[in-house]
Length: 210
Image (cartoon, rainbow, N blue to C red; front, side, top):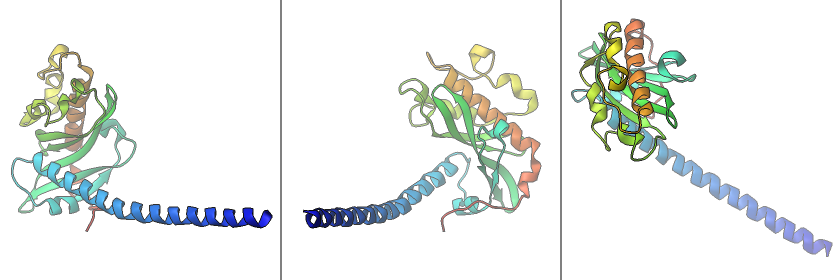
């Protein structure tokens, strides 16, 4: 009886080891694929926030990691890409977060010139309410395009609010918290790069896939 139990236990252990090995192999294969898809998505979004085509591989390489929770909304490092044309800096493209969305963090990518003009912005990730807060997505609504070409200097602070709060930007019916959070995040990000011109010459230190 003891021999029978030991034999079954050995078989179960071998099966468990085999399952672990198979899952590990699958995770390794899918992790690479997921990373590739994430990179492709990021490359596409980088293009979307710029007014003209750019060499995305160059953007990915010309990047610095910045930790600035008060301005960029996270306690962890965010990427700041630098768009240059013929060696001249045209804009910073910043990963930033609105931590005060209705349902949590709203991650964004914002392109801003050194002088404070917002060239473009896109939502990368959010958990806002479908049909209400998700209008911040460009595929759902054109609301996010309203920031392109807008000045975001210190003198513009009052304009960077929803109309309900005396600003220039529309809110959503039944969902004011979400657009308010996005507007504030974009403005804070634009002000951050204006206040930190040293970002232009900082040593690139982002890790990207080859």
